[in-house]
Image (cartoon, rainbow, N blue to C red; front, side, top):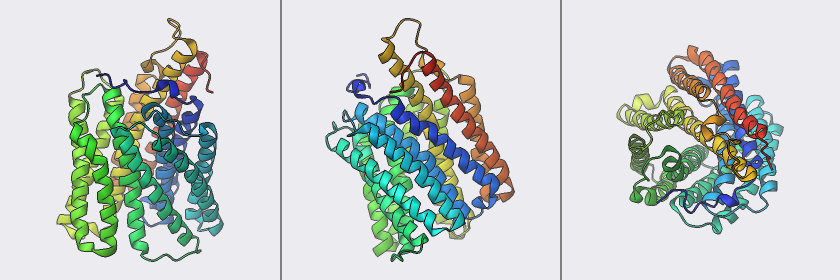
Length: 426
């Protein structure tokens, strides 16, 4: 059965709605890279103001920006349920997320309570509007494993947001919540393993077989993995609060679930029916390898507890998960989604006049996507090295900046091809 069967392409939103998110995301990746060059101490400890600003530039500015854009597109098409008032929701959430992320980064770098206050208001309002619209859409969505994964990811985003707002109020000096260390751990867990990983998993059930021409994921894995991961995250938070001795068991189960997803994805890619080179496949393979490396680093810390207490341990995990896994996979998705949307909307608007519409592969030159992958891979290697040898930080930031800039230029080239063929954005 075709994986495109059951997709509601006629409900796709105007190209401009997700595109504004997709084109803004690389600019925050560029800002994150510039922060590393300007302040190499961002990779010296995860608690420095520069490290916190860098982390949120990546998680809010790059990852959340791209993922909200993907949800705007996928919910109407995959779930058959458009967001209410999609133009207003897209505009308000995009502006709020952009300005709120800048304000929050400024707050970390300057310790100014006013900047935290502005960031709290903008991010809280923007995410609240988007989450409310998404909840309405998901409530009337057609059930599927992808919709199920998105539901758990959105729940995780809501929990991450509430915990993050509480921690921001703490930073601003307006509130002193109890169990701060547990709140930070839960904020990180729900944000990275809940929101980011669960959304990637939910989207992967659809896009990996569809765009990479692989067999579908095993039915048992796609049916149960997202729910199991979310339940384990709840248990993880509960164990930290009430029974810390059980946390290691829960963490081991989380590691097993992560390995199951990464190995299943790599196995499907080996069995892909189209054997032509595809740079987006390389981004995904790097992402899955980085997930497995995260588990290996965590396991090493359990076997050698002294390693777990070094600054390099959480930094290495962060670089592998954020840079190696999340940024890589989002890169791969952007290189499929943006050309596909440009081609699809041209088809719909021009009624597929013969010879007038470039193919998906012609939207972005293959050689430039290949060069961007090489730069991204080099940046990941240098960032990993910088967690152990800090003198590599400036070089890592410089290469990451080149990668982010080339990603933005490549996406813009697809937009130029779209407009050059007479495409309309709204």
